[in-house]
Image (cartoon, rainbow, N blue to C red; front, side, top):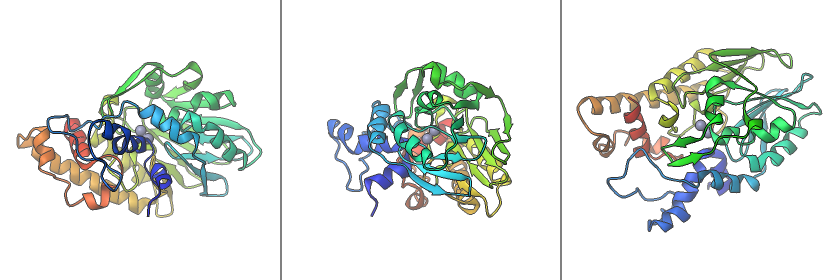
Length: 335
Ligand SMILES: [Zn+2]
Ligand SMILES: [Zn+2]
């Protein structure tokens, strides 16, 4: 049986939306929480692409404050660190620690404790996979610990200004200066640290307009960022320039670079491999094709959702916090 902790690890950003919808928000709205922890569908005539949770940042910060970090060794020098928020990867070695994503700020002390146990070298570089709060909220604290922050251009552009995420109806203030990347790049960047080659690759208009994935060539590890929600319908953040077709193209790029032994870290969910990512890619393509046909036939977004084009896929993929109807609407609106 899944514990609340497992759920939080598995769903990251979306966990708070689930908590809120199944808990305080759903009750306040007079909706009954379903026994599986989800909430009933919102009343008709609401935008199907919205699962409102304006309290999302605070929900995540509250959850992260109590959440210890779970560490998994991927290679002798590369580790997966999981808690509330997106999956974090740390590479250790003589050049200092390289970290991918910074999690939620209230969990930073847990993250630093976990990093200290890996080796004695200081934190040197922090890479952000994209601008979202559950991957960058710890930036400022980690920068003060000495991390030089690198990200795609749009991560800095978006962190510098207030952001709005329509899917959760949530506003984010601009990030403090210490949280902003010190170095940005438009397409690709290569680092040579800790006896490995780390390649950072931008995938345009995917989950957002700021996504990169990171390939450790020698370690044979890839962190996909939020291109991949392992085993779940993903969030596509249309407010930040995300699109289903960009997401599929991004996943294809990861697949081209992976082999059967590559350890692939998703933005959310369990550590995966190429076969699992391929299965996720097939799901994305199937949903995109079906929704595109509905849209081309003149169906409105509400009609497309009502047609339940993912019905045969939901048993396998509706385990995360993005509900099938929300996913269909996000796909529809991005086509
Ligand atoms: Zn995320
Ligand atoms: Zn994200």
